[in-house]
Image (cartoon, rainbow, N blue to C red; front, side, top):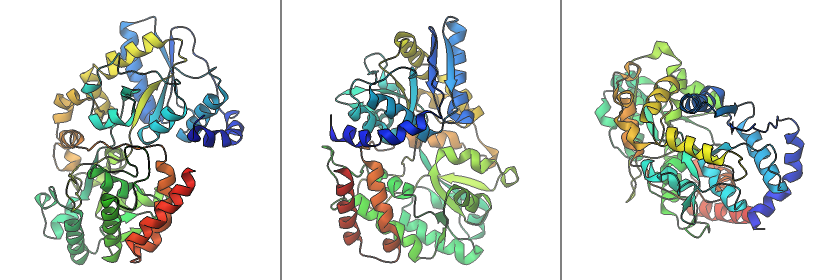
Length: 424
């Protein structure tokens, strides 16, 4: 047993308490079962994929269970894998990319390697890398967390800027633009939650860096990208451009109400922004700013998930053929889920489809989907490692001091110390 599995064993008793609240339904023969956590997004998208396959293979049906939250799915999956029980496990489970390595390294043999059966070169490389271990890839990428800088175009224009002024800029330049917007419109630039490290991680990945070295050891104290990200994060506060928020409702409310001018975030926020139909034509999307650091690019990632096949599946052959046929081979399917669900998938060939080339009046008639697709191909690959959540907690603990002008090098040492303790 490795040390990661040992830590998860310590949580087994807690997780067992939760499993009784969940439905455990074994798939019948010829029925592919899937665990997802969001009916309107990944649930209905998988149902649509299943319907396409069933139309050509009537003997194969699908049971998509979207009744549990992502946290409950994680608890349920790890509880059974820790207990060595595969009864009731699905054929396919959706797992968020930044926790994939923890599952693969904690439970060797629990997931089916897919790169021997499916051509992984058809997907965005950074998505494949997230679930690759010892030369084998264990997932079929689903949604991309490709990021963009969503902004209120009316505020930008009122401040004397155009969309071109946001093209391929640095975060430092954004601070300058935000200062002008605040002075001329009265709107703060963006809202931030000190309990969320998403922006810092976004900045770090734009430079191809993460919290860990290739051997899994911590890369904190001498991590130039992390240091620059923390410095940049502090600049927003020191320039008085931030509305502090706490929790999802306050976070989304600040930009959907028009209180702040911009939000740098993953493409999955599009549906939330477009839910305010009266703001159609008032928004734009620019490339993610880059850090003033060699190697940083105007593209990054936040969130995203992929499909994993359990090795215990009784329908392994059909399951892998389904993923290969629809998710790795049907570009039209990706046009449909983009239009219906706002899902930007990771199949590179889908970028050539009509839906991806269409303009969107909500965003001023810009070809936003094609833009996101172009940025998708530029995202640097990183190794999310197995302790991202533990390091995130250590970073969060230092943010209150950092935004008050605290010493960044001292903060990095404190992050390193806390993370080291949490990883033991």
